[in-house]
Amino acid sequence: MQDLTLEQLRYPIGVFKKPEIVTPEMLSGWISDIEALPAQLRAAVEGLTEEQLLLPYRPEGWTIRQTVNHTADSHANAFIRFKLALTEENPTIKPYEEQLWAELEDGKNAPIEWSLVMLEMIHKRWIMLLKSMTEEQFDRKFMHPETKHLNALRTVTGMYSWHGKHHTAHITSLRSRMGI
Image 1: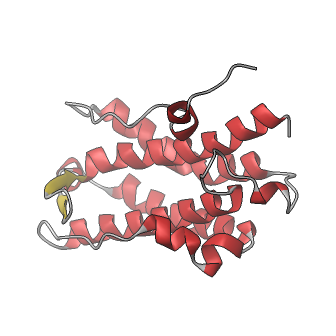
Image 2: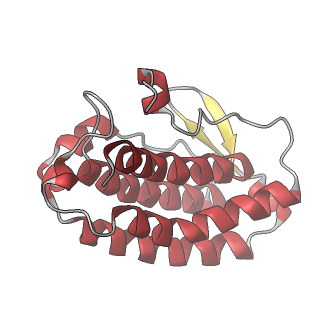
């Protein structure tokens, strides 16, 4: 087995690269990725023991349990951000300290089943919303107060497609490296 750098462990599928242009095909693929994520994440953790859920995916990284719980937290926030952008003019979203959320009791110790079900239900609603959106709605934006960037929903869709695959790969890569 090859030795992986910390960067390869942190970004097993690479970092998200914002495309210059989002084609309808790209957008459709990203929506399919978001739709598939709950089942893929569930498959990635299938059969893991409670002890294995406590393994970090990289040195000083989150445990598998924290990674699953974070993904549900993150995608719940994303769903709300979409709804804000669709109902308000360039709203400023509320960021959250994901690292601190992961250290809260539920982030560290809640059963992953709760987050898997939460993710499934959020994604059902999110996919219904995404599949109903018009081109003009995908152009709607929200402001991130830390970056001061307006983020178009079409690009954010790609970011969350990547995000789900990114955290699923953390788990599947660890399982592959450890043979579990």
